[in-house]
Image (cartoon, rainbow, N blue to C red; front, side):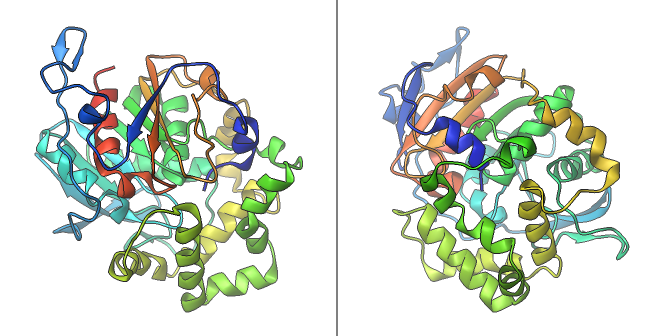
Length: 358
């Protein structure tokens, strides 16, 4: 989930940079009244992604594994092997199936799409039992850089939501030479741990109930019990995506990723670390020092705000506009909640195609 301080700053803002309002279950082209021939950037036509309904695909045909950094990473891959690369990064409590409809849309546009399980999820495993099961924001970002290195990927479009947006934003900020373009749901989500020490508005604190729950012994016990953690995650889905009518099969496909033996440790560490209850590994201190300065992101970027996401009041992106210094667009996607790529796959895929051409 996103940074509560970012939410606090965004609360109530509605003026500033231009925004595009999109209908989540339509293609972007039809939503803004343009056809493929009319959509151009710099005089060149931009492909319009065809409309698909959420749930059009049930899963990925094949999963792969590769040793990368401290992990054996599980990932899905689809599209031409020599196509331009898009890395799609999931959040919590989700997995690679957030992109089950997005990935084929991008593959059909000629992209090589890679969707990895983050540490502690699905088939991704730590290579050594000695590696601490931590999840500082920079650690997760370095996991993705290691994956790119392992797969021989020099540069890619990065697209994500929740933990995925944060991870992609960190790489774009600290290693911009590895990022061709960025799609960030929720805007600028790099965690400011110093700001996290201060109280937020009561309405905002209420939204973060699970973060405080995870800080308790009761929360730890719930997360370490597989059945209880799965029930908790399902409940979170209903709260943060109020109009998404997902079925039990859809949830269960993702919930299998929560059975990873390191899931509880990674998730608990991440949320406890954000609010200063635990300290990270010293190997990541230099990166966290850089991130504490809230570095600007200069790569071409499209930010997306889901209109029904309780953590992201829809608006114009002005709360974080100053953090993006390169070519930039902001879009609000109507009628969808937190899991934007799975709820509105066409709008998300179109944002990737458009960001690649900014």
